[in-house]
Image 1 (cartoon, helix red, strand yellow):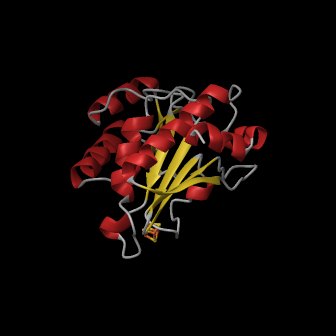
Image 2 (cartoon, helix red, strand yellow):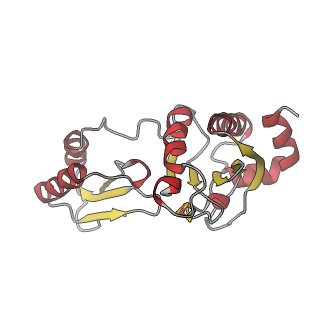
Image 3 (cartoon, protein in one colour):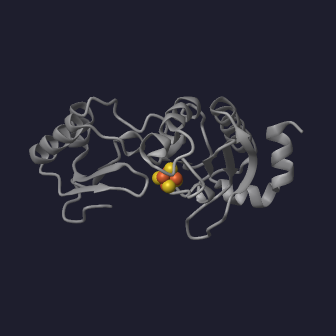
Amino acid sequence: MVNTTSPNKSCNILPGPKMGLVTPEYLETVAAMVRKHAIPMLKITSAQRLAIGGHSPEAAAEIWKELGLPEGPQNPLGTHSIQACPGVQWCKRGQLDSLLLGGKLEKAVAPITLPVKTKLGVSGCGMNCCESFVRDVGLFGKKKGWTLVFGGNAGGRPRIGEVIAEGLTDDQAVELARSCLTAYAAGARPRERSARFMERVGVDAFRRAVLRE
Ligand code: SF4
């Protein structure tokens, strides 16, 4: 997403919003900011974030400020994105509250420094609208609790993640996600995605480590 028309206007920033949730005020602020800086590229990404592109580094600093956010990313090797579907709050199929869990996960895992960009997807039911099986950490809700999947990837070498545990409460799901990411961070090679890490380490050894079986 690089503007090739001017070398000074090649910046692209991703200032949220978290889990794709917006308010009228946020949208009005974005609209005013886009007009003010004559932003040529405004896009909603596949990770439910807003990409604002084609501006100068100086404008980027102003945009962060105008959106009321600290200049980012705060932790370049932290969690890349957390997607969450409407879940039980807003979807008739929802079994569990994916938006609530997404918020809890964000607080718990954001400080962890990871080997490379890492994506989380939280789906409120087994329909898996947030593609939880192809996220580094995926969760989906069932009547009996959350299922946690680890090591998925939807990129050039796609991989279906493995189920690590089922029937988890919110707190257990957050704690296990944190354990999985901590174990991955400790054992992965530089820039090794979780999918490749799991192929190398094996799900049984990984499960034993994170579940302390
Ligand atoms: S995963 Fe389930 S709860 Fe979430 S949007 Fe899809 S159907 Fe609805």
